[in-house]
Image (tube, rainbow, N blue to C red):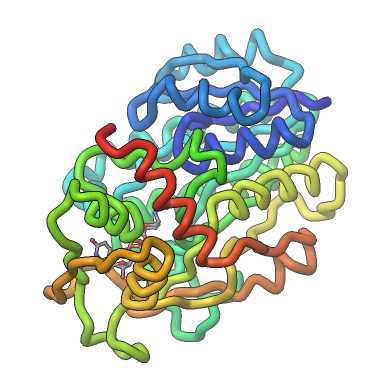
Length: 340
Ligand code: WQD
């Protein structure tokens, strides 16, 4: 079966995608610098699939190391590029570090991809590129607004770089997947989200509050123009998101894509408010979650959820796992790693 490179393959979405790629019979090589993950994730992956991925630990900002890797791996047929920094707030504090880490490695990978005979490339993008869309649900033709953070800019620039590369180097075919909000963990609880320090994202903060690591959840604003005043997002089970990568890759490998480059929203198509997530968690865990309403967080949009028609029809992919399962798996994972 084809050999696939997964960068950032020990990260949250990367590790779940490696599992699904191995389940489909692909041979997986991971490059990860362990800056936002741990070697224990490799054990978690192999416990689930029974197969140990090839693992290479180095920083993709080191161009010579990227070149050396590809010299020894000319048989790569697909590249799934996750490796990037992803904390919106952090990107505002250190924009140049974000541009260096999220753009340079993409360029080095695409330079090597262009040298291969034929390769399929999946770029990890984000619904952040839309900013606050004027029309909901959001389709792929929604205007790309000025990014509200350097992180969002790196995703917009990344899509442009990938698209322009494929237009020029027709041996490279690519798909950008614009994720909405990934949550949850593999049902085995062998892999999941490992936030470093205080979680920025809602669901890991909820589970850490419920298990006593955090004192209470701060809900960032309840004065938005939404049904209950709290922000609405499209929360997708990370396993559904991982499977979308396999489907997108197979779509390219089987030459189902006539164009050199395409973009797909990956979400459930359903918007849920912060308060709805809290209620779902309380029902799943049978615990009362302590929270207070505080001021809005800068950079948040009121509402963002996907129109997934294009992925459903063109890719043949649809999210299947319900919100309850995603929240339940996040809670099971948190209880497993309680003091990590
Ligand atoms: C969700 C909602 C918060 C924490 C970001 C990135 C996106 C992707 C996912 C990388 C918002 C509210 C949160 C808390 C809260 N990351 N919230 N209290 O901001 O939609 O998306 O993470 O790809 O690109 O932009 O996700 O989980 O941070 O927030 O009230 O302690 O929960 O205000 O409305 P977000 P999030």
